[in-house]
Image (cartoon, rainbow, N blue to C red):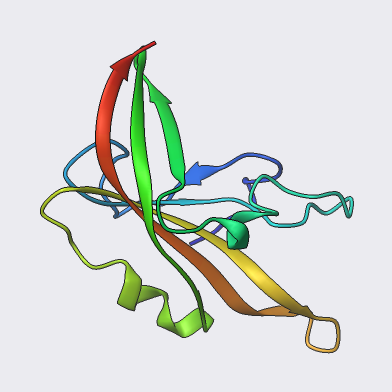
Length: 120
């Protein structure tokens, strides 16, 4: 994915289910911004089983509950983006920056399942 447009926002990754739809929706954001400040997913690795993630779409709140939080290698992302029969959310960010190579060595992937839909 080309994420140069992301900046300080979170974004849905194409070719995954649209957020709130049945399937596996992937959303990504930076852990650290180009300015050196914390990005939207700076604390993603602290989420744990049972924590809630809320997505606001079309006047409704979609409440997801965290099931897993894993650190994976960049080439292992596909293994956590499998299709799901229910609405799932995969939140992805980078972790472990290597100054020598100028790349992140790992990704944090938090997976959560939809448990409730509420009006705003």
